[in-house]
Length: 421
Image 1 (cartoon, rainbow, N blue to C red):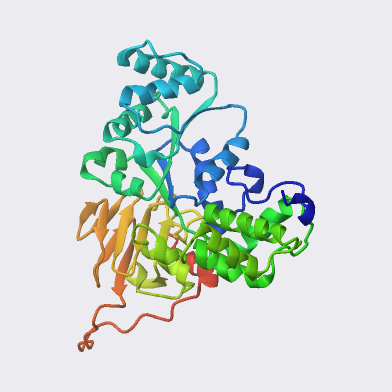
Image 2: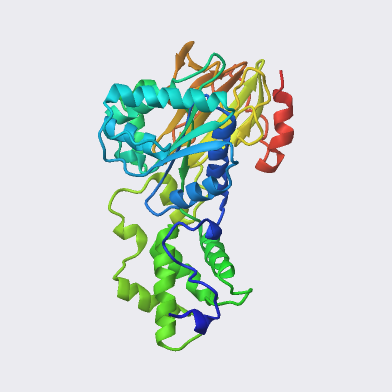
């Protein structure tokens, strides 16, 4: 292979999910933080979604490597199974041999095991990868398992990871009870142009490049164009490019080797070969246009507008703690209270199983499609939605004046101070 030519210790772009090569982009770091939160909170599921090859499995392996010894883990990757087969797979992970057990015995054994671990001060975690393949019956079994509890708390922590179809499945009417148990959802977007470059350099450094520039600067733009920022595709193209350089006895990769690799792989540009429509968030990242504002929200408290925030394609999470995109310091707001999902066509606000909920026109809702002028009540605060795409009518006499100039993102912490009750 090319290790000696490039003076590397190991292959930098293997497709196996090796935690030592994990590159924590902003989105990957946040997804990992959500996984870690399951260890401390047992009040619901955490759901992580992402496109094929976005790095979900590598994140999971890294998370598992860092767990304390008091955490007992069942990791299920085979998800095209019946409900009984799934429960048996979970028991196998916990060290049982359940294949001759009937379903009632399997459930009894699982319940007893969970209570026993709790009594011994151990935390129990169930991780299901490729969860988009689970049938509704299996998902219902998972919901019932999550209900095992002592007099104080639930005893099973659950992380579901899968492709974007998982979100559609969890939002179906048949699974409304399960959806209500979801505490946090997070979608891993592809790497940006800058992160793609940093990702490549990071993997080379881990492999022993010691700061040497193995890929010419002109390589990064076409690599992003043909991979769309998907880590697995980046690995494939970079490895093939290095093989092309090796065949030419070159100790660095130029744009010519990248082009040769693209031809060998018979790839078209990423956006033209995706098999399904890109989500608006992915489209925005791929186009490199972070400024496509489609709406804004005004945060009100006691009749005064205290904050304004633009909405661009993507996800905005609102809650009490500082790790939210929009923190509101109020005892009536949950840690992660609600989220606003913005696309180029619509904006949806969704409750994240908060204690006090979200209200539209006095009615508590789980999810609401926002229309220009909608007002959503969260705790003691109000969110007014302004759609920048809607035609604006001249303001009639007597209407309130325009709100004050909105603070920038860097002033968010200062702006949040007046939101305290």
